[in-house]
Image (cartoon, rainbow, N blue to C red; front, side):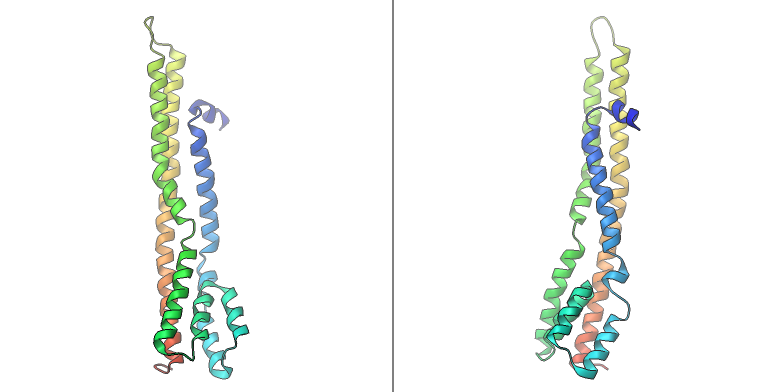
Length: 201
């Protein structure tokens, strides 16, 4: 592996840094965006059961808020349960926007890495081409310098694509997952509003 890095020349170092950041972000998002952590199963039913039995205190809402992103959305609704339907929905929408923003954390960085990694590889290719043309002399080409230039060109191009392809796949996966989680939370929040405001049972 070290021999490949040596053969690829100095343009490989920014690509290596980008790959480390991409792997760290992918692992972090895989952990943070687990459905069971974001939208715990049975949470809405438990909240509605407790509310219908004894109402909800501020302490209970604060505790619910800490448990999960869905908990934050439901807690915002419970705090405004005695207000009108419109005010309750507004409070839920505001909390939902904050939760949605948190769920999308680092996705812009991952998408940027997916976009620029091929360009960084292309930059390495250009550096390699410069080395190749620099190896030309009136007496003929220096085979060693020519081979080094080709190594830089090919390794950087390949490594840029190796970083970009998985980063793009995971970026698209996480975007779709966040959209799915947000829709799930919206549906549960609407159910909370309708039950509390007496539209449904």
